[in-house]
Length: 65
Image (spheres, rainbow, N blue to C red):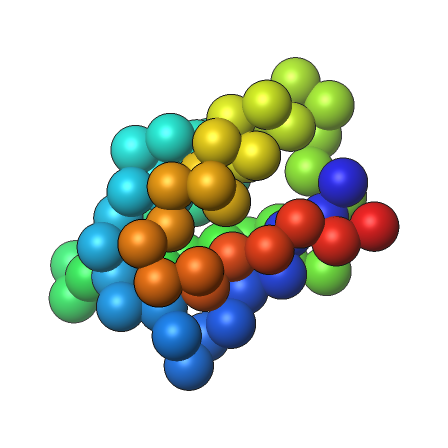
């Protein structure tokens, strides 16, 4: 599983970081940090990453193949 981020839509609400703190985080300015962009989400983080995608209030995250 991979997650694509629409950087234009992301408003830094941080719900993704709450749902999947090992996948997403926010920097000191509230900007999303997503080090796994273009990489597979580790198997043990897939469930939390899916929760993060579903929790984004502006639909800035989407699951990709």
